[in-house]
Length: 490
Image (cartoon, rainbow, N blue to C red; front, top):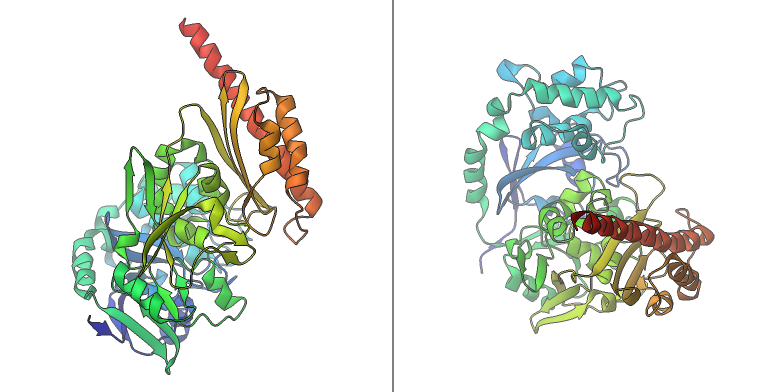
């Protein structure tokens, strides 16, 4: 197998080749300290404020796509074969301001200016992909950008003005996309990439899925890095050594999405953004839940498989995946085994995954025709926040009685967990609010939550119970509406 000992990508218009690069080196530090591209700012260093937003272009099944990402937690090895675009690269006709920049100027969208470059880059990504966005779509695009000065109204006006100005046909990233795709294709040499800084802080980029299995078999306790939306914080906040780190961002084999009669299968490298169209088509009940996972930058980087594999008790996706009866595929040189997602979590910080195994796919069965299903996320602030409590509920009933219940929670224990006693209290009972209230009371016997800075144990216990009641109220309302429609038709 061919091997390469340098990282190569394109930064704005210039090719970059780096031999001395470590697993924990961030794109933000590279841009500011080595390239003097200081338009990209450091605010939070945890992917929360968006001041460091840049665009990364990557080749995919959809062609060359550009996505807003957080440079502060984007690790350099993940950029191999990509196109990085910073705010310095933006320009309009004849060297004038770009339409997004001009709109921000005209509508006073910048005051102190610190967050402005990141906001401009988020709006630029939206402007390219959605020339006529609604206000709601603009707000979603800005979920990952915090601003203390403007109150956002001028920024929203600027975004609408930029869409009215148009000009996408003259934009460099759009008009030269085929040329850039050719340049990136030339970088795809199919080699395993092995990087280090002074012989330490090692990073490995496998050439294929089979190569990934061999790499994991040959190294003791490597760190697998997918989107780095969590691993990035291990570096910037906890100063952890992640070496040797195995980066899987480049593996197209992990980015497949397939659907058939058995359900929806997501490769473990599929991002939240890429998963959304197929996932929400199959499970429309998650339409309000899914956009609350991080901001746009986090959804562009983070992967569904990584969110599960990480094993966090407050991960957003495990409760809904457990409720849906999803399965994990775990692969190694020994082959692939499949387990229910609910069985993957053993204890806090411990999962049913051998050191040489990796999560290769998630399989989600179709919803039964009579299933009532929903996911919930409770946080301190509405957008881009970590869950205090997350939940996924799936209930079936036969006429008047509940016949099946799968009630899963995150944030209530050391792992994502089903509320087995609440399920038992509900199954066989009439589908009434009284039955759900009794099941909600049983949740106290399922969990002993902890108090931390996100929420007290009392708050978590109350929220967990109330979410089940909210689920009933929503589902009962839908049933009543359906009955009325049937009666009107009759």
